Length: 408
Image (tube, rainbow, N blue to C red; front, side, top):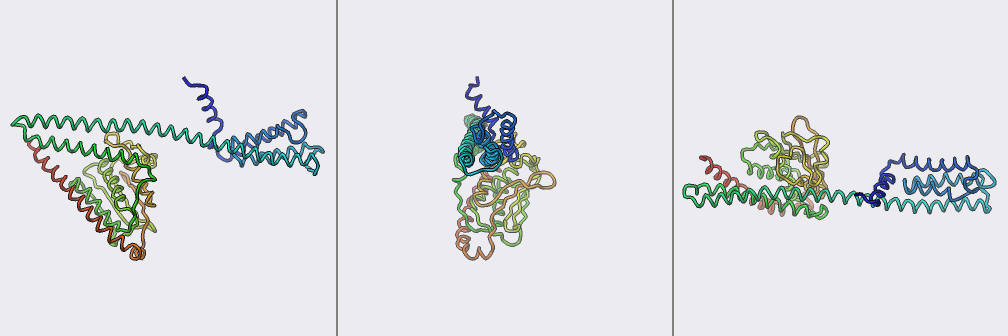
């Protein structure tokens, strides 16, 4: 049952809205000031002549409900009202006791406005804290549900295939099926490893993502990413569009590989297998631009920003495993590298993701970037060869597994 404290808090959230637009906030100050002026004009006995306690009400209310700016408007208005009702009647202020009371009221109003604005700011922080806590609770619930789902399926499959492998191994006429079951079990183990990697990423704050920028050729990196993905599915058509000249960027090549892999694997997952995945790299104005396009169901316009949230997945993702953090991480990495990642409007079916990175002029690359180019390329090409060898070996293993299973 909802407590009295919760009901009062809910009422306060409804009345003391910190997100009112400025016309509403300043309008409130004017209304409060005119209301007090009307009362003093219509009811002579209302309040004392000159400045009195009632004239501080519009100032305090405006400061708490609308902020310091509207409260300043209320101060000016109520000071004029105080001057009008200060003997002798009228707006003339003489330097006597009554006039000094009016001047003192103005500065008193400034103090009240400052305190009221501080209360409003504290309330705004409280509201933001409550919203953040609610968001974290929703994310925690989503994480628990997702991890439960993502763990249950591969563990069940792993257990089943290991049991099958044990049964096949115990029978002479079924032993040729053991490698296929072992291969499938290994695939589920790889899925669990990816889940563990995802959980590690989730536990890392965006601000803690380590980025080690260096100058390198984006065209070569794009070509290598396409080759990596092609090795995972040799039958898949990957169309690479690239300029003849290198496009030099300053970024972290390993982190850029993460972005490439996330975008290209999403394109493979959510588009028909007989459709092409298009990837291009080039330079536009002072930015290096990468585009990854698929020919799948596309993304609704209202989801263009939403899908980059943590644990958020598009409508087409319901039938595919995943935790909804790939695009979140990719955008965070792009931002850390002083770039951008967003969905770009495109004609036809499918969706297009655009990555922008800082472009490096050839003069800059030849100057302070020569050492990083040479050092980075040596390390990067070695890493890529190792990755490609591992991927090719996985591809050959999968092919042998399919060959063994073919007669069944």
